[in-house]
Image 1 (cartoon, rainbow, N blue to C red):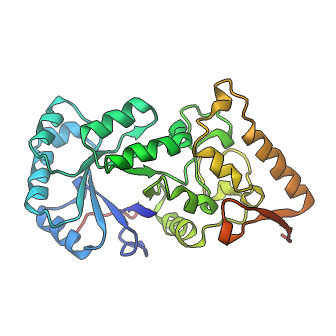
Image 2 (tube, rainbow, N blue to C red):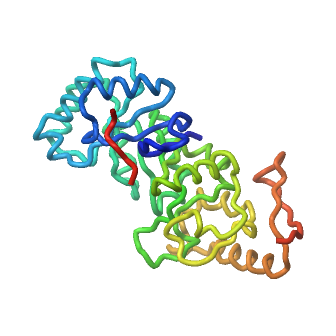
Length: 291
C-alpha cells in the first residue's frame, strides 16, 4: 500500500510518504519544480490543477506537458480537475504523458470511461467502494492505480447509515492492499502525520472510529468489529440497499453491541488474519509555495 499527502512544509513524513501532491499555482517556476522533484527522487510528485479553464487559457497545462516530456526521468504526474474537447486534443498530442483526474468515480461509466481515456489512476468513492473486488482487476489489467480516501466516510446521500458508507478501518488496511494501490488522506495539517502513522504503522485503532474517520455520525468502536466485516464490504455492492437479503451490516452492529456489553473485544490471529477471529476479554494552514 502506498500513501499520499498534500505538500505541507512542516510535515514530519514529507520525506517518507510515497506520493506528494503540489498545487501548480504554488510553483514559482519550473526550475523550482525540477529542484523539488530532484529533492524527492524516491517519491512520486503529483502536480495538481484546480482550475481547468485557467490551465488552458494561460497555457499552464501545455507548459507542464512540455516540461514532463523534457524530463522523462522525473517521477511526476499531472492531476486535472476535469476534461473537455480541448484537453483531449492536447493530451492526445502527448501520447506518453502521465495524467489522471481529480474527479471522484462513483459509477461504472466513469470507471470504464476514465480507463479508456488513458489515465494512470482513478479515485474510487462512495458506493463503488463496495465493489472493489470487481473494479481492481479491470483497473490493474490496464495498469491503472486505484486510489481511495480511507479516513472519510463517503456516500452521495448525507443520511446514509454509517456502516453503509465507504470508509476503511486501520485494522483492514492490509486486506484492502490487494485491491487498492494508494491511500490519500484528506485532513488538516496537524492530523495528517498522525493518520499516516495509524494506517501505515499501527494498523489498529482501539476506540471510537469517529476520532479518525470524518463523516461518521455515531460511535463505532473498532475493537468490536469482526474481520468478516471487511471481506464482505469489498464485494457486496450494498445489495441490502437494492432489495437484497444481506443483513451483514445489521448483524455486525448487533454483534458489536453484544461484545461491548459482555466486555469482549475481537482479537485477530496474525498468521490467519482475515480467515480466523477470536474474542478475548480485556479491560478496557501550513501549505506554502514550493521554493
